[in-house]
Image 1 (cartoon, protein in one colour):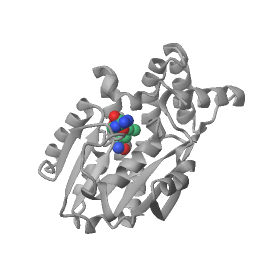
Image 2: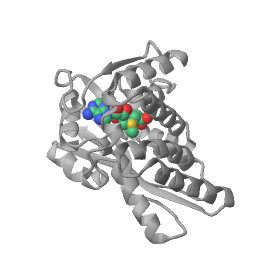
Image 3: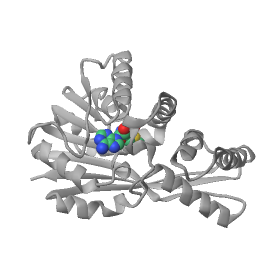
Length: 273
Ligand SMILES: C[S@@+](CC[C@H](N)C(=O)[O-])C[C@H]1O[C@@H](n2cnc3c(N)ncnc32)[C@H](O)[C@@H]1O
């Protein structure tokens, strides 16, 4: 387990790193495949039939805004994030999109939510669980604050499968392992999810597996690589120079049409009985 994941300590990062994260979250959130994975589980949650939605670990509000802008959704969304700066960015972006009156952003820790039992019709956790050290506590908190009959959507990378091609496969493996250690706290959490849902007394009602692979040229992964280049040295697993060499070789691979980058992603939809 990593103790260095910057996404799990966003309340302690400086403005420069927070800006790197904001840029990455927004670039990733606009990517068509990422949007498709998000809309897929929102549909399966029948989110348009809900009136109150909580987005835990909301970051800049990618999922909160996606819910609020759905033509069939007429309810209210609350976004909670560890980082005051990310919650503020979320409020700014929502206001800019004319969604300011539909979404409320707050600072809080999803391991100990400051809401009464049975408050929300639905809870969404979009790429949060891989960044927390106690995912079961978060799932149990989601189960506590959702109403009986309410739904929980959990989406994340199966980041133990995150991999990039490299001219030297052994070096590539070492880079993959360093990257995962640097930016992910719980890389195997999506493999644990059926057990965690069961332990939180939630009923699994749907699961969608995806592979986000780019082969030849990179697009989605390029913005990730640019942000990881800045985040990895802060985690202490590579020097600035090593991280730049890693990122440059992947950018070069993409330019030459020989890029390989992939990770599995999963979404789970569960119901509280
Ligand atoms: C990878 S980002 C995802 C942000 C957003 N859901 C998205 O998909 O764009 C993970 C987010 O979880 C937040 N986070 C991590 N640990 C948290 C915790 N214990 N409580 C609340 N938020 C947390 C981070 O601040 C960060 O914004």
